[in-house]
Image 1 (cartoon, rainbow, N blue to C red):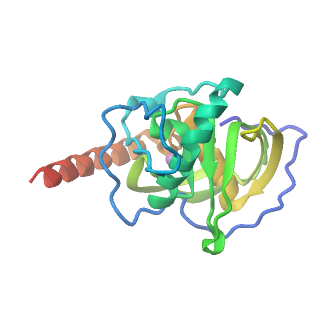
Image 2 (cartoon, protein in one colour; image 1 turned 45 degrees about the vertical axis):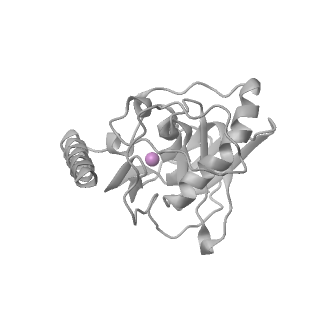
Amino acid sequence: MARTGGPCKPTLVRRRRPRYIARMSEPLPDPAPDPVPDPVPDPAVLEPMDILVAPHPSLRRRARPVRPEDRALLRALLPRMYESMYRAPGIGLAAPQVGLELRLAIVDLMEGEVRAPITLINPEIVCASDQLAAREEGCLSLPGQYAEVVRPVGVRVRYTDLDGGGHEIDADGLLATCLQHEIDHLDGVLFVDHLSTIKRNMILRRLAKEQRQKASGAGG
Ligand code: NI
């Protein structure tokens, strides 16, 4: 995440009550052995895409920008990506988490249980507030793991939509956290990378252990 403390001060227009980035009420399916999703899905089926779990290598690569010629594929895949996020349930999902190494993320805070999806193509943080705050985060790619992460309270994010239209969003609170978390994913960064090495390794070891236990439990 790029942090800029320059003259650009985002206007904080959205107030959000604290909630988790992702709340895990049920274990996720096992990580997909093949990180490349079906290239010609039937969007009517709305089959969710498998969400990759750390330490999958796709989660650690820098995703490439979305080009105009990618839009047809994204139009077909986005309904499935949303389905994955809503089913998990989560409030944000980045394309690398479903094995699609493109600069694309989806967000829906589901406030009042009402869907308000935001599809961000090639999003970038254009400025961030100097003020920092800690908020508990979780991630669909680190199921069951949570930690307080310190980030700028407010950010301005620029992105395009699926039709190529440009947008800017000024966010604070949960939305600002969620946007920064998802944009991090596009650079191969996970929320645990903002923690101390000791804390990060503790969480990654715990996750690996839980995943092993889950795999052996599923086998027996
Ligand atoms: Ni995440």
